[in-house]
View: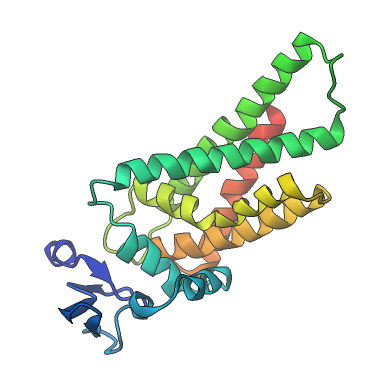
Length: 231
């Protein structure tokens, strides 16, 4: 544990702790450090364009998630708490929009909509978005705690929250539905991409097997869907 605390960063290839990612000799002149475990460059994304990182995230490459979760978004940073709040609010707002799109396909809203109908819709939206996502995070924590992982320490609630928020970046495509018309079925395609991306992020932070992470993500999303349908 003491050694892990000394290591501020992670090798994106094997996940082994490293003290530093690069040495800077002068402005624009750096040398990337190699991992002591796998003997390759610890984090090549230091010199890569953002577009390369985005492509690798879409391709679900574990090293792209390690770069973001361990080497970019440092939880010890004073700005981390504010960033986590912004990510959470953005995530919930996109979920609210998702709910409204699905509801607008089932119901016709107009000036004649009664007050009681609006109250019911708001209550249902609260259940779907807030309580549903709470159950999603709670189920993740419960399933991963019951089943032991290969990692030395158990990931904290904040680790899971950050992993879920970052790996749900596919939800940003919901913004396109505000501009262009798409069938509501596109939302379920986005949900599938979010599910697969969540699986990879959970695998990275827990260092567990793929089958276990797929099962945990499927159960967590199923509990979220069940919560929004029942209550």
